[in-house]
Image (tube, rainbow, N blue to C red; front, side, top):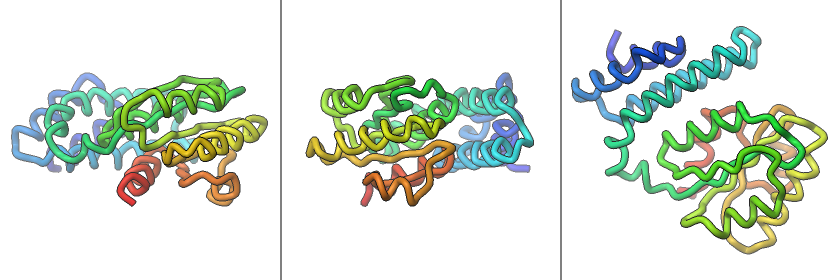
Length: 209
């Protein structure tokens, strides 16, 4: 098994104590930082799928996310010099009325790992706060909205509308358990992601479009 494959395995299995050293070893061997990062993103995608299928639960998912975070910390200096860090700023948060943050945190970590600067607004964020953050932070390209409760969908729609009507030109991506691609299109969002891995892919697509 290559070092890059070992990194992927360690993220999947939440080996938080070993991951940083192994990522450094993979770099020392001459592996590309982007390839190592991609292996960790792939691992978190597997973790996300297992979570969706009830094969693992929140503690396991969080420890894998922690492992990825520690691995990304080692990679960051090696990613900073290339285009991966030039994607702009993403404002992310859970919409008003919703206090769930695990999915949002995973997406934030994936996006940061892929080269976005992250402004994490936390949970229960009003449409106005999202708009102000998009205005006040430098080089905001994406606003990412998370929602796990069907009762908060109207707030998600309201947030998309207020950002679109502002004329800022930022792209809005939405996700969460009750969200579908059809719903995202219906409320005027630019993109939809079913999990953290695909959120990173979609965000990069939107920025580069």
